[in-house]
Length: 309
Image: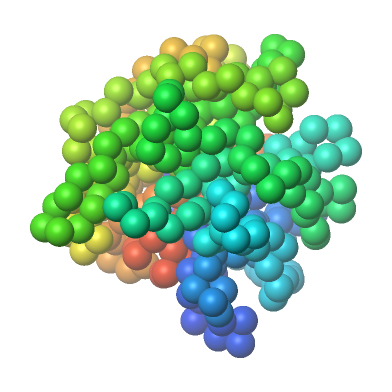
């Protein structure tokens, strides 16, 4: 794989009137001549909300529209998403557009927990309705600490999910940090899920965090990009910060990892010189785009790259 970086598309300071703190986890759907990018940012009360903007599909750096009000916000007090939401992936199911999202709750002994919710849209993502006040994929004996980001693929009459599962909290210099692994779940309808507990990408060590998978099928092979970093000293240390891992599969269950041929890394300078993370890969006509965040987990904005064939 070889990616041609096209540069930064948008950063919060481009439009200070909207008050965005971050443009986090860009998640795309194609709408004819537009690419609709859903992203997370902070609301005035400090919780996380989900917004969207439209890009010109033929010229992605051209922003056509920014929706300045959140389309999904935190849930009721006591619910799994009482302290904020962040989209993890989107999927078409007939007339429905499913948004899988992480719902956050603050904790006492550890900073937070997260479980997966599902919201539905019938207007191409201009508005969403949560399917329930509860999660569709909760923490459990299979995933005891956290359910995070994911990608969902419909293949051979079955729904497949690769998702982030917290594996262990570490107390590092009086600050709690969580290790993540990527696991597999399946479903017959995209709503009721059966987590297998199977880790599809073994962690390098327990002190690594692997998350935010994005999967695309090219030919008869599935290609997955995911974010990977060290558990400690990763905020300002470029060597420990997020990079993009890469793996391939024929069946969405058994994956072969080879980061060295993923074809994209940090830049020598600029907005993505310290980290590269939270990618989303999509197809548009004969092109394949990879949208991603750079430095400071989305505070520096998001950009894109184009696959060279």
